[in-house]
Image (cartoon, rainbow, N blue to C red; front, side, top):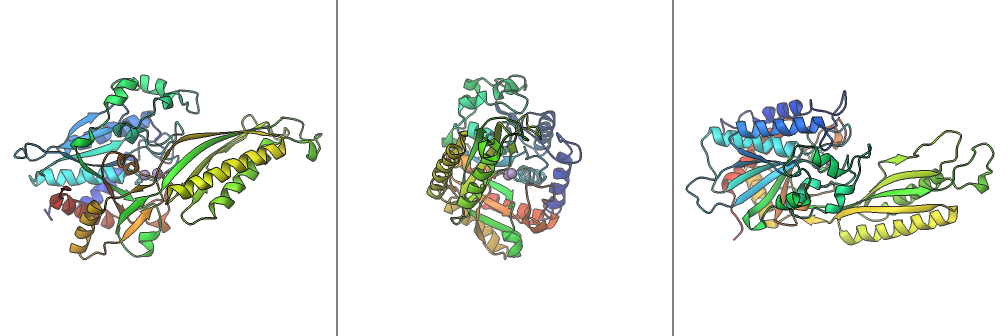
Amino acid sequence: MSQTTASLGQAILDHADQLARFSDMEGGLTCAYLTPAHRAAQDQLAQWMEAAGMAVRIDAIGNVIGRYAADPAVTDARVLMTGSHFDTVRNGGRYDGRLGILLPIAVVDALNRAGIRLPYHFEVVGFAEEEGLRFKTSFLASSVLADRFDPALLARVDADGITLAEALAISGLPGAGDPQALRAAALDPATLLGFVEVHIEQGPVLLHHDLPLGVVTQIAGSSRFQVRVEGQASHAGTTPMGMRKDAAAGAAEMILLVEERCAAAPTLVGTVGQLQVPNGSSNVIPAACTFSMDIRAGADDIREAAIADIVAGIERIAARRGLSAQVERVPPVNNAPCARWLMDQFGAVLKKRGMEAFELPSGAGHDAMMMHRITDVAMLFVRCGNGGISHNPLETITAEDAQLAAEVFVDFLRHFQPLG
Ligand code: GLV
Ligand code: MN
Ligand code: MN
């Protein structure tokens, strides 16, 4: 096996480069849900999975799922799942999500070539949507598998006014967005042994500790919001400062509140990543301002307390300025602890190979958070270069680290012991 795994690291990086060519933008990587680039990435993943020896299916939300069937001698085999997302943020990195699909494909390819079968079905999922870029709601793909998909989301619109239902109807996906078909794509938890996800760390911790790999302890819960502030348009030159209902100035004060409140507790973070003055003009006082809010923490009660304060603060600021504010919340995803029994199996492999079984929490969200609703989960983090930067084209990993991660993953799979 050591010969067959010899060059996996470079092969994984090469595949990430190839996949990054399918992009919605010139000169960078954007792969939003159900765009032509997304479709091309999905096809490419299906092709690689088949070439690696997997039977591939594409489900009603667009997940690409490859099954490396169990050793035929095992008649009652259940499924160990792995995977991550292949959609990206706008102008993102090429490893976020994709590493967790490409690495297991490379590993299956190596096992298949070596004639090694596992005593369980091993499934690799390319989740179609995790980032929330197009419809401003995340985890669409894993929520379908976990039977947590909210059909109300089918009415959400993208920047061009196309609803999720319409996008699915013309997608060519099985079911064409029918809620029943989406429901039917849910996994049966009784068939699952667990879910493990390999992911680039997207932060500087492993780099700082000079470690290639780490085992995740828990994934911070997150809540996202869209806020719309309304005031009154009037002339920029003639309206005295004390007589304005300036929606953008109100939003600015609200954004500073997010920053201040989220600096007040450990692990709590708050971000306004989108901010618009719709139909704004330089000489008109803004009648409306919209912004997104992303609030996360390592404990649900810390996050919820911050949200309550921020929403109350937004209402207070709006009232004082004569504005109105609507706060729309998309379904939150709670903090997800990783399963000790799975973490320990990753830890044992790391120690056996002379590495530290270093444990760290994840501040970023992952498909494993949603899978946690139906099965035990664990994550293996791979060191992120360039100071740990991610959601940025500068995101990087080395072939050596990808190689180590692949070898650890092979070891993990070959020694995997189901619970009980
Ligand atoms: C996903 O990348 C997230 O943490 O927002
Ligand atoms: Mn991401
Ligand atoms: Mn990711």
